[in-house]
Image (cartoon, rainbow, N blue to C red; front, side):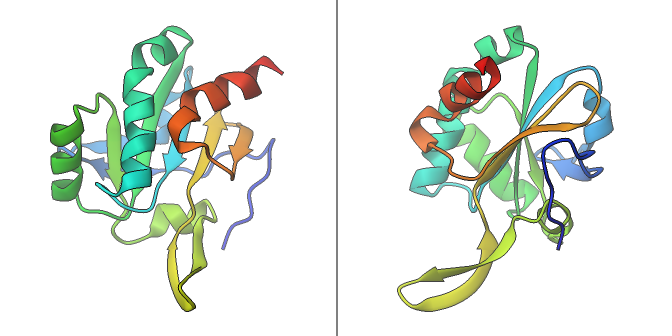
Length: 154
């Protein structure tokens, strides 16, 4: 399992989006990327976070960002999530858990005393050259976009 740090080169990504189109992180060189990992489509916290990015998407684009969400859900699940909430950005299907492992966000979780493996909600801010600028481990679902803006302003 990877342990990534600020200043590291972001691991390469190659995965299918909600439309079955191959997406690579390298496609976005020259842009800043908000790469956010979330546990599951259509769950309350994940929906809140995705809708916050949706509601702020145009201003994030103006600021030079592209938004990419990643979960271990299928393309079909992503299609339904996007349609239901009118999400304007790519969601990558990481069903083989390669990306979550490469980014070190596939972790042991504990709910009601039951241990299981799952995705840790984490956001990576990647600069125009593919270098990790920030890692947000305590994501504020309701204010995810503002949390990123505040970090970038420092």
